[in-house]
Image 1: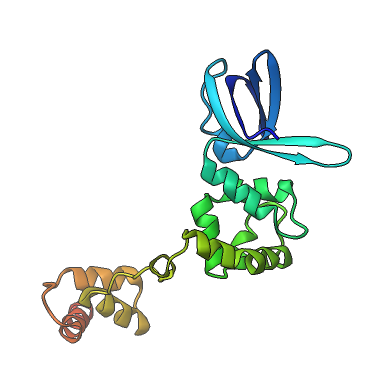
Image 2 (image 1 turned 180 degrees about the vertical axis):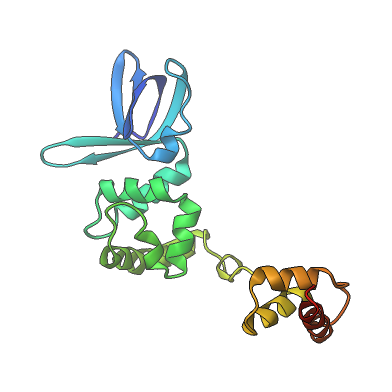
Length: 199
C-alpha cells in the first residue's frame, strides 16, 4: 500500500496530478483544495496518499495535508459512498467545515457538494456523527450559533418608520439627522416630526 509520495510535480489538471518518484510517475486524483495549493511544475511535492483497490482497477488519491487524507478515508468508509463523493465533499469543504456540519446534523449543507443528494447526505451524517465527535473536530462551543450584533436604537427606529410605510431611505435620512444617544421612542418621535416638516 502506498501511504506517501515525495517527488517532483510533473503535471496537474482539473482533477488530478502526476508526481515523479525515482523515474516513475504516479497519477493521483485529488481535491480542488490540494490542486489550488500545488507548487510549480518541476518542484518537489510531498503527498499523503490512499490507494483504493478494486477488481478491475487500482486508484491512487493524494492530499497535501494529513487532515484531508484522513477525512477522505472516513467519508469513503460510509456504506455506498465512493471516492468520487469523498473528493467532491473535500473540494467543497475543509475537513473542519465538513466535520462541523456532520457533528451538528446539518445534512442539507452537504448537498452543496457535487453529486451529494439529501438522502446520501443524511446517511453520511448518521454514520459519521459519532466518529467525528470522538476525533474532537466538533465541540459544543463550535456548534453554538453565531451571535448576531444587537440592534441599536437607530436601527429600531428606522424599522419602526418602515413599518409605518416610509421607505428605508426616508427613515434613514430622518434618523440620521438626530442625535444618536436617544431612546428608540425619542428617535421615532423626532424623526416623525422631521418627516412631517419635509426634513
